[in-house]
Image (cartoon, rainbow, N blue to C red; front, side, top):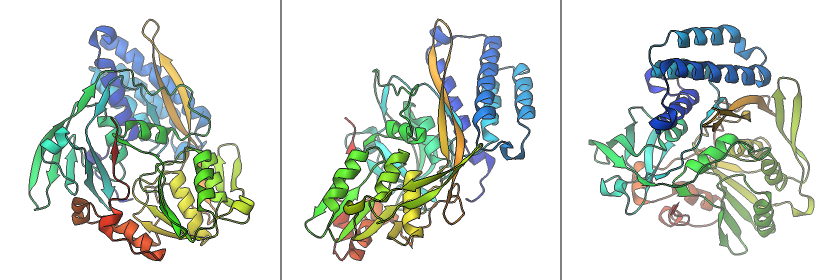
Length: 442
């Protein structure tokens, strides 16, 4: 990853804690606190974070850092704070020391349903609008697919921070953006969200075993509805848009449908990952032998992660996998296994490199007024069979191919079109761009 200026970087910890305090301040009558009480809350959170990290972080040396000194310094600075905003920054720095993809605070979810009506994505090294909902304020303000987002909420979107920025801004009633239009002009817009009061709360106190907490959060925060979709090309093959590794049953159903076909185009673009067991299940459908995915190295042990062959149900046709800057975790691991084993072709954009294993630890704060939050701690790194980790590196596709701003504006999909060509089909990029339209949440 390229280095970035500190003013442009927003860590998971900082963003999560900003949300945390924003949620508390959203109900001043209920959560009004004196500065001393806020200092106490900051020390409580620090103590909780430290215990979770000290006991569970995958690296017992904490990257060579003196963790006791880090937390002692943070506590001293909290004691000297003169404003609650200072406490926020102090606590945030404890997370920033670790600077990895799966160590962060998970705040309570907002009860309001906030929909901004547009989607953005890192394509190459730039951030672009990729979809705008009809009837939204974004449409009314003139935002269009292909517009480049230069600033959002005062920050420069980058591969390293975009998901965190989206998480941070999700509950905001409006977004201020600096947009570069197709003709090269720039425009500042304030885009209002559609807000509906409700009880849509993501309860993360007891997430399902094996779930990637980052994926659960991303799925909950997306305006667009994501489901498994496929395009059947008769006896020739199937194009499968797979949004997450969330269901072994769906994997079984679709792979049985694919059996005997000449090709399978597996579209993992936008797939942030999911369940470890689903990754193993899917991988097993492409090999007539058990395949080692990698070694999960935690503090106390190293565990081999293996995909067992699906035997007589193994798919033997041509496999083409599509990835992009949002294909994280299980998507990256699957693509890299296919690449290492030379089982298929990977096409698209560089993946983000967020493959460490995080474990979620639930907590609550308060007596009369109780709210729930949690801490995700990186408990293992996964080393591939080539001896390397994908963390911060990602998967480099066999064919690096990304859409242009003109493609985005016109709704074309050159990546899927290229995949079809490799499969022996002729699908123009215009048609490819219409095969899986964005489905917005109601």
